Length: 219
Image 1: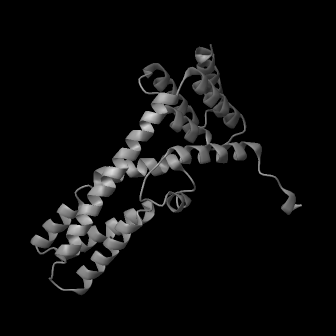
Image 2 (image 1 turned 45 degrees about the vertical axis):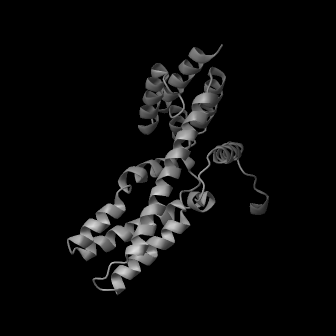
Image 3 (image 1 turned 90 degrees about the horizontal axis):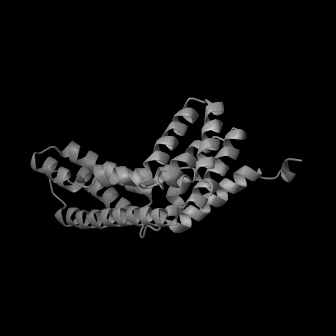
């Protein structure tokens, strides 16, 4: 019966691992549960998005002010709109609300500059960027301090099982492990080759490579 169907063991394992990862990733002021729900629960994708945003939007308010000084109101509105969309998706609700307000004020108020609002957003954005950088750095430290040969073998055995089951999350699991290997260049190169095999659906080569890596790291 449909109502009696059980969640596959591999999926249960994947969900449990995701929950554990979320518990170790702390980002104050962001609604992680809401943001991750928009990304299918993919924490790795969320962190990659944070890293990109930290670079792309760090100077957003400076760009907005330059557009206003140049009389380029439409471009300024676009910057505010982008901030609204980006931080709404990331779950930073305060910045989302302030950016929404700024966008509407720029649309409604002709050539007037809402300087107090712009200054508040500039401070809030700077604070959000600091929180993002801290969270990503702390997460890297946690991963670097916890990875060991035993952890590597355990993670690769899970990857092996997922490949055998044709589980599409195998590649994401390799991505997560690659982010944790630190200075182990040999392992990093092997994992990158594994990503290539998985990306080209060469599962036989992937299974063979995973088995070889496991043998190398077993004590």
